[in-house]
Amino acid sequence: MPARHPQPATYAARAAASRAAPAELESEPRRWSPSEIYEWEPSPATAARAVWPARLVAGGALAAFAVAILVTATALPGSRTSAEHTGAQRREAPQKNAAVPGGPAPDGGGVSIAWVGDITPGSVHGLPPRDGRVLFSHVRGPLRTPDLTIGNLEGTLSVGGASKCGRPSPACFAFQAPPQNARALRWAGFDVMNLANNHAFDFGATGQEQTIAALRRTGVGHTGRPGQITVVRRRGIRIALVGFAAYPWAASITDLPAARALVARAGRRAEVVIALVHAGAEGADRTHTPEGPEVAFGENRGDTRAFAHAVVDAGADLVLGSGPHVVRGVERYRRRLIAYSLGNFAGWHNFGGGGALSLSGILRVTVGADGMASSGRWLPLRLTGPGVPQPDRTGASLQLAAQLSREDFGSGAGLRPDGRIVRRSPVTEIARRPG
Image (cartoon, rainbow, N blue to C red):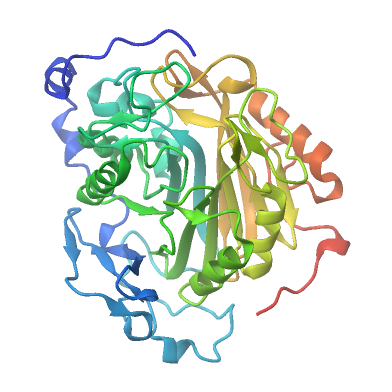
């Protein structure tokens, strides 16, 4: 690990010492209203049959329902009841919604989606200035331009609580940033954060609850808890997001039947399904995507390829990965895109750096209501200083990702050397999926 950044004694001291963000940034209008994000999570009282819908209303305030509502009775704006789902086709054209904030119903151009890797907006190793905004100052443009921007939140937004590490140890990492740093995520352009990863529970259930509350206050959605489906409406198209990892606080990556079932349920709520997966071994030498299970620090990190193929077979249109802390290849499987890892995206003295560990990127894909990616591009980045992403004119991460795509997936490579995604699979891969 690199040298540590000194941490102020308290978050209050940290806030007082940081340079305040200009007022115009706090009040800047967002492209999309947070009321366009809906979350379904199973209620412990009714297990898999019940959900707790939560609507994020404009201004970021949470209107939470006081009772669990059965899935068969759920009817939020942009969703349909299970009776309406009966006999419905998996790929039906969405209804136009002229009231969608930020733009009209789709005209055939589809929805642009951006994905980035691991983000740690502060920890015991250091807290970035301006409540974390410094982390995104060089990449805010490409993050805010897409219709939907998603990242992997590596750590908690919380105060207090017991660390999973117990006593400080150089071999254990627990990440905790102050809750107000959630505002930097929204300011940067993030719409939904994946919480299915190994650091979401660094400070236990209380830490995760505080993290979710902080995201909701700022109007940023989340996904990744067991059974959770988050649906976002963009340009009249419903997009469902589900997150997976190898931990009990996330939807399981090792239980393939359950993963397929969750993706199938998500497909009944939306035209497009995105599976976010945190998996794979870690380290500078782990850039290839192997066949078979991967292990890191004694943990079964899942069979990444088998998982990705299984959820695509079940109806996922995009599979977006994180976890290895390095760039990996992109695969085109059954006409769907799988990006296995884009490396680390942003941190403050908490990620190892140098070589492959400093290479990063933003993957932007345009998807239609049929789930097909019509276009896409990899924007190469490099982490500088304490872990701040900046555009990289050398294109090093793109060159590596394209090379890995060819070496690992052959004719199924999903990324070209010029940064564009491959739009069509080989003839042998084109097969109609069930549903």
